[in-house]
Amino acid sequence: MANATGHFKTITKHRHKVIKHCFKAGIGFQGLRHDLSKYAPIEFLNGAKYYDGSRSPNELEREDKGFSEAWMHHKGRNRHHFEYWNDYSPVLKRNMPVKMPLKYVIEMFCDRVAASKIYQGEKYTDEFPLMYFERGRDHRIIHPETSDLLEKLLTMLRDEGEDKTFAYIKNVLLKQKDY
Image (cartoon, rainbow, N blue to C red; front, side, top):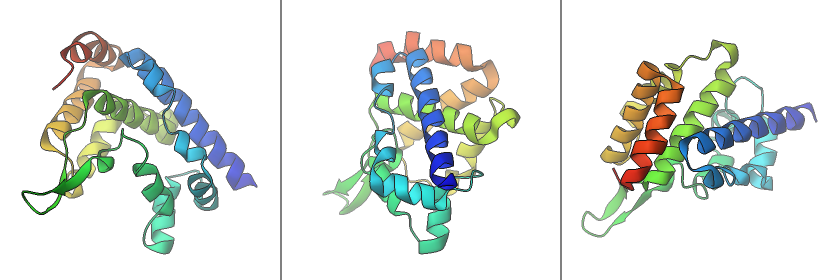
């Protein structure tokens, strides 16, 4: 029961922080739908089972089973994850990353910043989301333009801070409709 309570509090705290960030970024109503699938039984029950409070339960589920049922469910229903944006290319005859729509890249940015804040707690700095992104660079399968935009936003966060980055997203980037 303690794991279920801890997991519920963590995912809800994270979700509320993402919603706040999405409103700052100009995509507030999209943020209201963020990560609702985490409350579905396949995600919630596995998350509670593997919750230890120090890292993603999906990592622990992968260590136990070799894969994460919760993550497989989650990434297939949440468009703010670049893993959602892979499709079969009839030209190349294999799965390829697809360029994400701008509004989902912005939500992904909000998600990464919020997750860093939740998992780092008082140790959080605006550099952490970029450091986490860079650690996964070698094994990430993401469209190059999507990766470049996310890295640009995370670098701006590190160098110029949260207020300037969210203002740029809301007042410049969203007006472009594409990247």
